[in-house]
Length: 131
Ligand SMILES: [Zn+2]
Image (tube, rainbow, N blue to C red; front, side, top):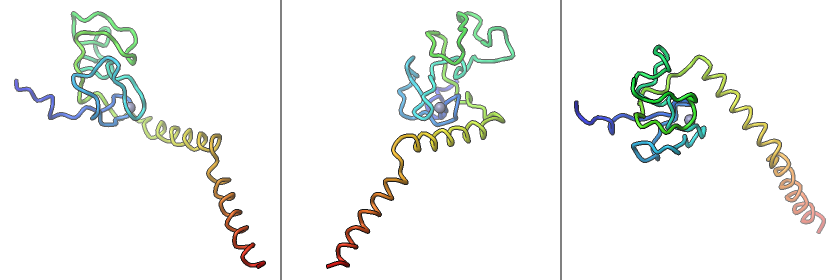
């Protein structure tokens, strides 16, 4: 068994974004730069398996109840296969896009900024025409 971990790319278990900036092995407070999901979690672990008791194939590991929260488990091994694109992925992406859209509108309104800029331009050109 060679040390092939480094060659394998880790992806966020939640959104699939490649985990590149986090130092390896993953720190307990590591989080996805895209969706801010905590990465030192059962869902990101080699031993995570919904087919077995406690969802963990490591028999000695203490049970972790919160599978999606950063844990203190000493057996944690980040799995390059943690991300499984679920059927709901496109819907979740769409919802994120919507949230971003609405977020932009409730905050700084780019449309009104544009209008203001245009009005300013028109005023400038208008002044030029009058003189
Ligand atoms: Zn993510």
